[in-house]
Length: 534
Image 1 (cartoon, one colour):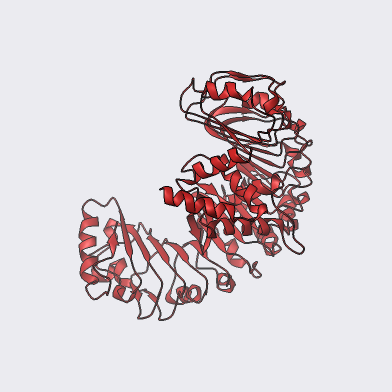
Image 2: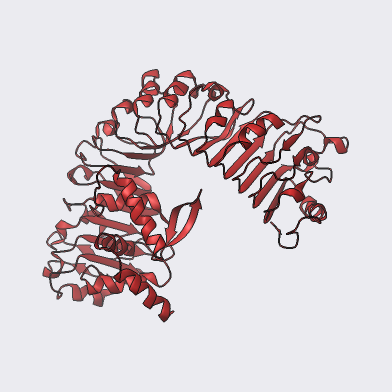
């Protein structure tokens, strides 16, 4: 462990100056906490830690910082999508290294108890970052009043296992009025009294067990990043004072209607809220997530097409009429779109998206959860950048599968098939799906009846020699009554296979019998002894 600490310390010492502050900023997250890349880079930008470079997008520059910290082993990848690390964790020993470096450079002081808090009143006016860390209600039971040592504080971090763990108060006379970043995981009585910090740029609160009062949020003129995950959020009737706000993420089912007037807003996420009127005004918007189309006017649906900087779009669908020609027309205008998702909480037949004739060709993620099309839309075959695909279809064929199999970058494919023809087959031809690593399929035809071996769904899924050469994980789900003991034909040809997951609705003992049948079918597979079932 000491050797690892020395290596990480050396890695930090060799960091360029512009990366050191970003690295130290990682200290504002709890140990073992999964940090989403996009959240982190947006916070760096909001704090002014990212330098603009000619001809480069600021978020792309920030992602290059993130990747460099990954490459230098200062943070460890947690989740990877299509080769891109989308989340990370801090190495076990990194918090110690970061805190040590922060203290050496007067970047941060750590408060574990009331004694540490008392020492703040005696420290020299150089502390830049305060870290309140406690595990009990009395851990930091005290009051921070005027203290010359706090006049330079720019960042506050609260981490506790109790909603009242920081059991004290902060006076407005502390000199903390220049705080620029507040991050809170766990409750804190300090929070509401800190929202007077008029220079605040970043406010991040995560705790479902508390109420967060943002009624006076408009006074935070310099706020650039606001993300609140809480059980209850109190909002003002207007947000017009937040003229510099770039990121707004709230677990709230309502947001003030004037959100569409925020001139610098780039990322907007809410929880199942109706799409705001005048959404087309947000010309800089790159992310629009979690909204419903229920009750939206045709003008607002058309307004979506004016968001030409949009990279990510996610709608929660409640009714089949919400996906119509106007929405399809707007989607066709979003030429920079990378991620498109629709979600319904059950099954909803709607074939409107099949009529899309000029799709945004840069799409990397397409998920249509619960939105059923009759067949696989043909335009998906034009998405050569596509990495992740989730489809619900009434029926499909070998030709439809072949269309998708030509996609050069597809790495994850989830297919839910709602109808199965006993005389049909799904054959994965040689050379198809060259990049696919994960394939999941659901056979959800409740009316399908198993009368003979020819009716067994599994027997109609076929893999030719050389198909899916990189497939590592295979998931097959179906109703118990659809399985008669067969396994996919040619499963031994999927040479990179490492893991098989079998799922049967109302399964009883079927899972164990199915695993045995699959093991028998894999006797000719070169990796048969290492393939895992779960």
